Length: 214
Image 1 (cartoon, rainbow, N blue to C red):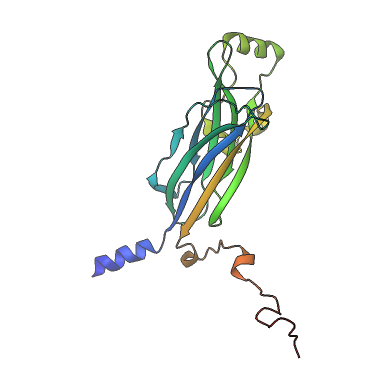
Image 2 (cartoon, rainbow, N blue to C red; image 1 turned 120 degrees about the horizontal axis):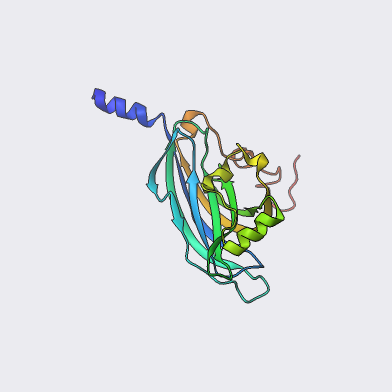
């Protein structure tokens, strides 16, 4: 009996965050044959209970219509548990392509927080690439096929050292999320939008047509 109470008490000190969705598409008008890698970064109080922390999509070609999109529709499915919201999970995306020498080169880095509120969400993530410090380094990197890139892609989700990194904007990636949370209310965290939790009905709702208040 005491063991059951202990387990119940421990269960009430954590909440769950379930994130599904897709890495839907990307816009890189200057390139073709692109694939995408992703990973999640989160605080020390968070644990993954199910799902994949990282993955890689298939290589896709640019659509031949006016949109010129790269379509992956690659599924995301992960569940976290935590004791507090500090270190809320972030999705880190890094895209790669093939240059004229057949080398894999980075086409863009990007990140976004996993949405806080339950429901369906769509994010258009701006992408960027690191830049060489000089024209000579830029030519050398192009000639040798060794473009500037981060050793650890998760650095894009951190603030330390970013102010000394030269980057250039390049493309967008569209991601959709389906968010479900559990037991956050019990721990005192209200993530329901105010317009949903306090819905105000118009005064004439329920009145017959043409009827007015006295």
